[in-house]
Image 1 (cartoon, rainbow, N blue to C red):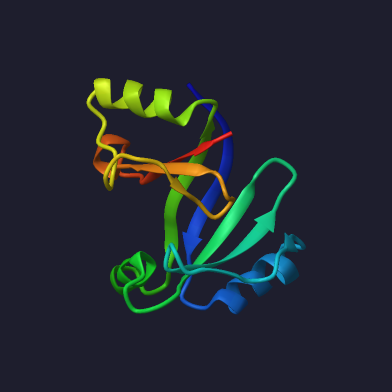
Image 2: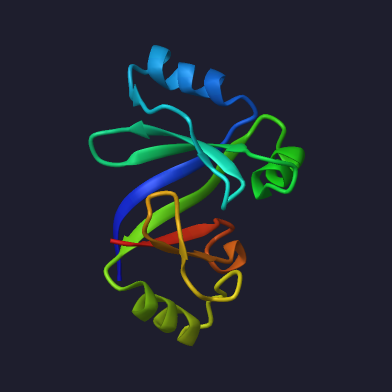
Length: 134
């Protein structure tokens, strides 16, 4: 059911410093910062040959990333995103298997302008999973 790894999202307390590590120390291609007000984050994409790293920083006090950074001040992996061919079919199959879809269960438009859903980390080895329509 799952396809390609789309990205690994890392919450960071200092977006520009994190981008500098990937750009300078690792020699990666790094995008400009992109505010995502609907999601309460600012993102920078680190483009790799086979996937992306999504650096996340809170945008506003109600950001879910702000709460994550309160618990993890140094930052850390926030979620892993997999592509699926049909997000509604994937959702329905996962729910039938007992997985919990976060929110109202309906896909939202994500940072890549494609439908996404998040799955409860307790159902996936302690890892928050994002599914994105391929």
